[in-house]
Image 1 (tube, one colour):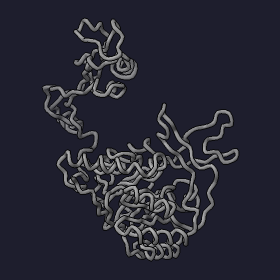
Image 2 (spheres, one colour):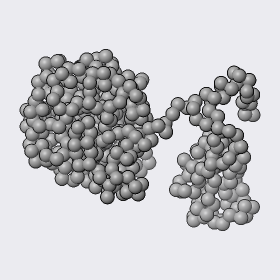
Image 3 (cartoon, one colour):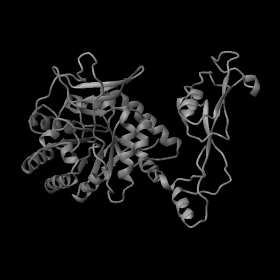
Image 4 (cartoon, helix red, strand yellow):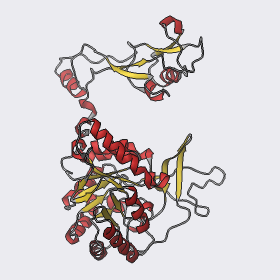
Length: 438
């Protein structure tokens, strides 16, 4: 069985699965429940000067029968006293000495940072996470994303923390920025030990079309909030890879954003994450989800002959390259397994109206196709004209039957050539201009 133990920037935990700073990490009671369920670490809900939250605080975007595909909140940092939080961190750390307990902090002045870092350290926290990501409520006060969006300010405040800290410091980055690597580089310049990303994305999930007030409603008004959940995972993966692939960043990364399964976690780790943090999925399903996450990651590592996390970490980073270096001569085409086709013809509609018109509806007898499960006899079925297929993948994306449409690599007879190489050869007169499609 693979070893899931994690050493992240000097912070040790039994596995890489941490509860992210948020509602599930607000109290000692929740931290105890998380560790009893099998989580490796808890990043405490952000501690700072007293705040007052509003009611209500959450809204969600559903997709068909899937609830909370996207989740929005206008909740701020903890509304519990610093005294209570630091007392409970100490209590949790005494009971769970082998698990990671990270204190998330958000302060305004240099002296406040000095005080709270000392208090977190005295409470026994294994590390600090500096919250520079909150996109609402706190940023209006000059904190949260107001810091994360300004690399120079981030660097200065992180410098204060590094001056005072005696335990590892993680800088949590906001995605509400043009280029997240600018903030990551600033964190490194300031001496941070690691970064975590992403925090939530500015959002409005829906509008009540009777009252015209978006949710969550507070009286007759609302506010933009922080978006998270499965819908943000692609954005988070991209930003993690950007930081992992940037030699000027070079810091351990704790991956956050839409993680709800072992597969999600494995993808983040393959793109460079050293640990992963989960919040929305716990709010949706409870702490117990970690059982399947640990079991699934273990089985995956074993199936690949990997002995631990280090064998997986970063394996996919170098596979992401600038578009202009991709091979223009590479080609895949779609092939339909008519034995499993149900005759919904979504692939035909998608290709005909939204792509490249290379799927025909034909008589099944004309291609010797049998009846797939649930398909109506005598109904026309889709067939790909492979010589016209551009390999866009749309038909495979819309097909409701797993494995019914697969993309197959085909030889083109042309040598590999990127757009970058093509432009160079075109200038030198070595190749003719590419003719436009009719």
